[in-house]
View 1 (cartoon, rainbow, N blue to C red):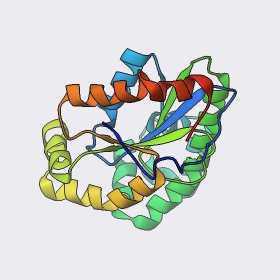
View 2 (cartoon, rainbow, N blue to C red; view 1 turned 45 degrees about the horizontal axis):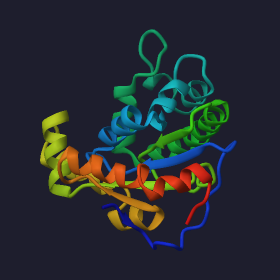
View 3 (cartoon, rainbow, N blue to C red; view 1 turned 30 degrees about the horizontal axis):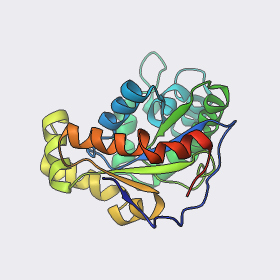
Length: 221
C-alpha cells in the first residue's frame, strides 16, 4: 500500500481546466518509466515527460536552441548545426555553473510548454514526469508522486540497463535531491523496490478504489 506523506494535511494544489494532473518524480534508476507505462496502458493516462519537452525545445530553431547557442556558442553544436547532446551532457555533468545556467534557460521554457500541452489536452488523467524538483510548477498538478527504490536496487538497474559503473551511478544519485527532500515535497510515495505486481497493486489501490473518487469528484486531501 502506498505511503502518504503527512496524510490529511496536503493542500489542494489546483487543477488545470478541470482535468486531473499528477506530477511524477523520483531519482535516477527509481523506475519512473515503469510507473508511467502502467499509468498509460492500464489507466489511459496522457503522459508528458519533461525531458522530452526539453529535447523538443532544443531542436533547431526553437527558443531553447537559440538561447543555448547564445550561452554556450559553437562548442555544443554538431556539424549540421544541431545541438550535440552528448557534448552538452558532459559539460553539464562536469561543471556545476554550466548545469545551473542550462537549468535557468531551459526549465522556465519547459514548464511553459507543459502548461500549453495540459491546457490543450482532452484527457481525463494527465501525468507529468520530471526528475528535477522545483517550485515553479507546483500549481499545475493535483498531487505529486515520488517513485522510490533503494539505492542498491537503483545502482543495479543503472548497471543492467545503462551499463553504468557503481561509482558513476553513485555520483549521479548524489547529484540529485535526497530521499528526504523528495518525500517532503511529495504527496505520495510509490515504492518500487519490489515486483511489477507489487507496483501494479499500489496503482490499483490509488486509482481503482476509494482514492480514485477524489480524482473523479475533484476533491483532495
